[in-house]
Length: 275
Image 1 (cartoon, one colour):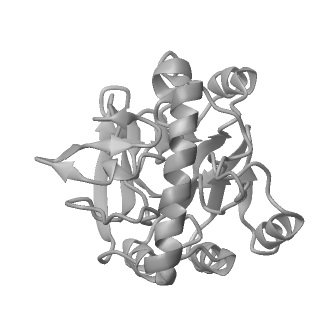
Image 2 (cartoon, rainbow, N blue to C red):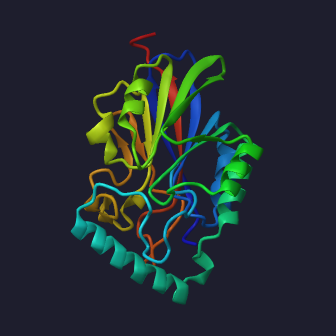
Image 3 (spheres, rainbow, N blue to C red):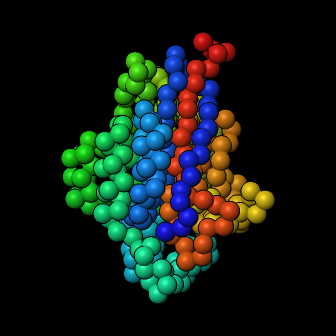
């Protein structure tokens, strides 16, 4: 595993709450070891823990292609497939300590569930969870949000949390948008923001997928599988409501450069303009 993860903090002013709420955002675990992320989570003391996709590896390993179709062009899909095969080969040869193991993901989720309510959405590496995955989530009181939402109360505040999956259900998103209360959307793909989320009234959007751009020069992300070269949403906060995590793991044979793995913590504070 790469260098130790860091804690990245953001503050967002939102309407509909009277006191601050601490929300943790975990993304792109990819079944790698994340003991340092769990340690940071314990220190951060979140009220809510969100997991925005690609926690588990549930895709076709023979082709390296996630089961769910996406909006990439045939050429882009072909490139990603070839790149995946080369990357997986190099990791098998030279990076065996960084191979995926479902128990790594389970350990992080179980540890998180001991700290605060956990809500999980699905990414492009998760076509559908196995029966044992669903049983594990249920046994540990973890809420799965696959184009679905739930209502919860935190410190007396009504919070709705939704999960927009890779195979996005836009009709569900429109229904979610019309509901009352503070709305937090887990959306693994930040590129979905412009296409589907920008015109909604969702208060907070939590994403991952681009792994921080893998290599950063002058704080600029260079490349991502989802965003291509110089991705628009590599990592950081955008539009005063979209927070993109650089992810918890390194799944590439090349190292992350100037791009630490991270746990993201967002403190939601009352918007004084609306009371």
